[in-house]
Amino acid sequence: MIGACGAVGSTVALGIASLHKRLIATTGLVTELPPFQDVELVDPGSIVVGGHEVRTNTFCDTLAELHTRSDLFRPSVIHECASHLDRMQANIKAGTLCGSDATNEKLADRSGLTVERCPAEAVERLTADIVDFRRNHQLDRVVVVNVASSEPCPQEQAAHAQFAKLQEALAKPASTVLPPSSIYALAAIEARCPYVNFTPSFGVNPPAIQERAQQLGVPFMGNDGKTGETLLKSVIAPMFAMRNLSVLSWIGHNILGNRDGAALQDPQIRASKLRAKNKAISQVVNDSTTTHVSIEYAPSLDDRKVAWDFIHFEGFLGTKMSLQFTWQGCDSALAAPLIIDLVRLAAVYDQSGRGGAMRHLSCFFKDPIGVEDPNLFAQWEMLVNHVQSDVRAPAVEPA
Ligand SMILES: NC(=O)c1ccc[n+]([C@@H]2O[C@H](COP(=O)([O-])OP(=O)(O)OC[C@H]3O[C@@H](n4cnc5c(N)ncnc54)[C@H](O)[C@@H]3O)[C@@H](O)[C@H]2O)c1
Picture 1 (cartoon, rainbow, N blue to C red):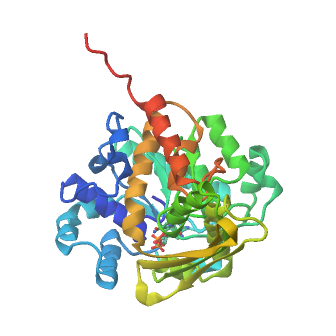
Picture 2: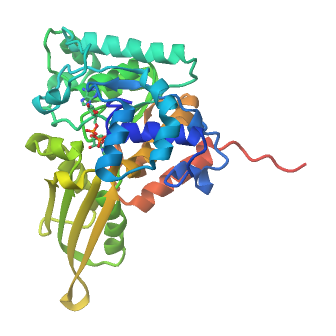
Picture 3: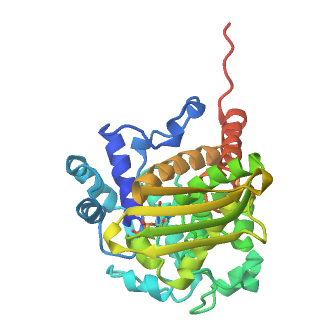
C-alpha cells in the first residue's frame, strides 16, 4: 500500500491480521457474497502487507489514534494483532516526495526519505522495493494499492500523452512531470504488478502510463473509492431516472475531521475530490439543475464523517417534492474491506494474464476509469457477469 500507515492503510492491516487470527467476521467484504463463492480468491488472512510511507507513524500508532479519537476497533483486537502488525511494519519502506505538493510535504517526517535527482530514479527505486518485497516473501502476486493522501490535480502536459515522451521527461533533473501517485503507478507497472488507485489523485490517468501498462500486460483500475455519500448518490440517482422524476437541485455537504479532511482544506486538493464526487449524478442533472458539493473540515468528527444531501425534484403536473438524507459513516471501516476486495479481485484477474483497465471493478470507484455509467446497479451487474463468465471455474457436471 502507498500511504500504508494512514487511517485507511492501518485499518486494512488490522483487518487482514484480524481475519488471519479469525477474530472478526467478514462483514463489509463484498467478495464474501454468494456470487464470488466459486471464485478462487486469495484467503484475505493470508495477504502479506507491505508498502511505502512518508511519516514515522506506525500501524499501531495510527490504530491507537483512531481508537482514542474516534472510538474505533476493540482494544483487545488491536492487542491480539500487535505482533502481526509489527511484522507487517517491517515491510514498510520510505516513500517518495518526488513531484509532491506543499501540503503533503508538510506531513513527511520520516527519516531516510531521499529526494531523487529525477522521477526516473524514484520509479527505479520504488520498482526495486516492490520486486524485493515479492522475492523476500516468495509471493505469487503483488497488488499495489494507493491509499496515500489526496494530491492536487496536475496540469496536463504533452509528455503525459505518450510513453516515449514521458520517459524523456522523467529523466530530466528536478522534473515535476508526474505527481507521486503516478510515479508509484509507473513503478508498480514496471514491477509487473496490478495497480489500484483508491484516491482521487492522478495515478494511472496519464495515457502514457496506461500505454506502458498495456505494453507489459499489467491490469490497473481507479479512481477514488466509493464508500459514503457518493455510494448513496449512485444508488438514488438511478431511481429518479427510472421514475422519470426531474431533479431540480442536488446539494451535498460533507463534514469530516480526519487527516484526509485536513488535506482537503487545500483548495487544489479539494478540487480533485469534488470532480470525482460530481460524476455520480451525471445521469440526472442537466444545465438547468442546481448542484453543489462541499467538503468542510471539522476536526472534532475525526474519522466519523457526516454527509447531508438535499434533493429537490419535480414530478407529474409540476409537483415539487424533496428528499434529504444524512449519512454518518466511519471512513476507514468503510474503505478497508473494499481494498481487501480489490486486492483479491485484481490478483485473480492478473492471474488470468490480462492487462489494461479492470472496468468490471467500476462499482468500487467514484470515477471509474473507462466506465461512464455511474449507476451502482449497472456496475454491480458488470462485476457479477465478469465473475460468472470470465473468472469462475467451469462447473463440473455430475457423471
Ligand atoms: N476513507 C474513505 O472512505 C475513502 C474513500 C475514498 C478515498 N479515500 C482516499 O484514501 C486516501 C487515504 O485516506 P486516509 O483517511 O487514510 O488518509 P490519511 O491521511 O490518514 O493517510 C494517508 C497516508 O498517506 C501518506 N502519504 C502522503 N504522501 C505520501 C507519499 N508521497 N508516499 C507515501 N505515503 C504518503 C501519509 O503520510 C498518510 O499516512 C485519501 O486520498 C482519501 O481521499 C478514502
